[in-house]
Length: 188
Image 1 (cartoon, helix red, strand yellow):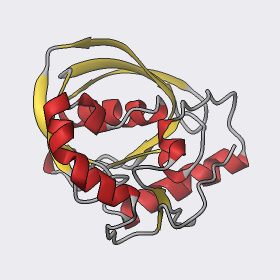
Image 2: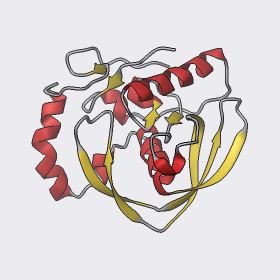
Image 3: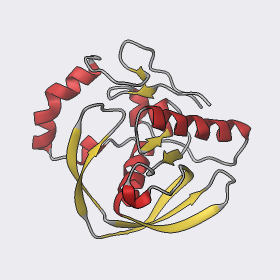
């Protein structure tokens, strides 16, 4: 497995909509493993393919660092789709593509989710709490939406200076990144 560079805020691939996956092959299995490896290296709990420059509808989630879900292995979800949502709760979110930035975001508390696993078998589950939050955050990435897009206009204006620093590459991350000084490419 390989650690992939994570694309940072300001890279155009983060604003593109990912395309559905038609089937699983050895390349996709390796890619999902690389995403899990990358997520672990960056100490993340979720990662979307667009964050590593790939336009396939794939997310990975690893909640093993959280007490309530410590026994769950990392999961790859292919073509995840929210079928139903209810309630709402506010929680602080961060993002590997926006290092060091954390803000309160309001999202539905509970969702019904359909996705395919790494064997391309379809699953439908109810997700609540942290799992619900992470899945919604990562599906947003697949649709070209960042968590800062959920903030009020006033809050985004207050963050403009920090976001502009990210676009200029004036940030540090403890993992490989693609920022403004590197090529803005994408795969697939």
